[in-house]
Image (tube, rainbow, N blue to C red; front, side, top):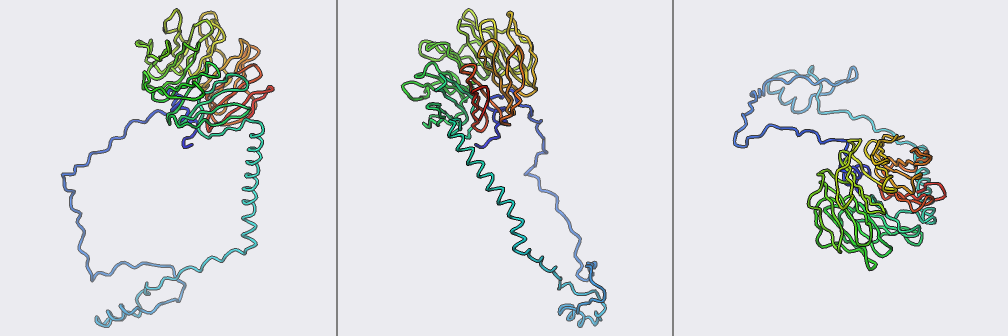
Length: 411
């Protein structure tokens, strides 16, 4: 891992969210290599001119005899130099600093040694605990997407083409070296088939027990999100309003997208309706076989959308933005945080979760969103998914994997 997790999330996973705009370019005067720079003239050096005295603090009544060069020069010139300033040939160096006694050095170093050993012991204990619980992450690469097939099986993807599999109560790396491109989203049709998308239009297909990369993708644009409505029908969205459709066994690009804004998330409901959200508060609705713009109550970028039913859904985004779809329109909902919210998942119309930067976790229950008091990590959380009301997962920066079980999130 080489990037700061939040910087990576903002730049690669959420390029719309960069809070630090690029400063205007600084213009420097051009250097004319054909022009000879003006000569620098120095005054002639007069060897007969006595240089100014360099005064050094000396103890009183301390004098030094003239050196041999001074004596020879004085003899030739007939000058008495016995009263001139002392020779500068000798520069007294300060006495070396006495070494600390060994016992004192040991006393100073001992706390540092104890601290290192304590941290090492804590690290080993956490490692053993994590291995025992099965929630230990086998990677430090940033994770951007996760999909669970069941409580016992799932997949996660992320930085540098990282692919993790959850099976047998443990996460493990699927190392095939398919791509070094960042993967942003994964969707599983069944335990035997799934798709993952990412940087440069990368599309991976899982079938026959292995992942393979499509030799030709219909786009080179960054793909942010993929969803499968059925084994034969799916959608992927991304940069510059890119919309891909999977049908008849192949992916094709929608020729005319309703927007040129980046689309960061797409969701389909069981009735074939769909929604996509992205830059500038963009909301697209897929209905009657067409994608069309939908009215949005915000201009903030939206990073995730989740639908409970055709008439009920949620979207989250920049600065804690939360939108609720109800009664045929999107409206703003109260948010308990100003942190970027990156992903939302609903288990039902009355229960759901949202995660984001700085380890933010929100819970929707009792008709309102509340901030989780327990703070497990300061790393950004990029994706959350719920298997059931009592079982869920979240992934994010530095390969962090959180598990929700028995009413508690843990790492």
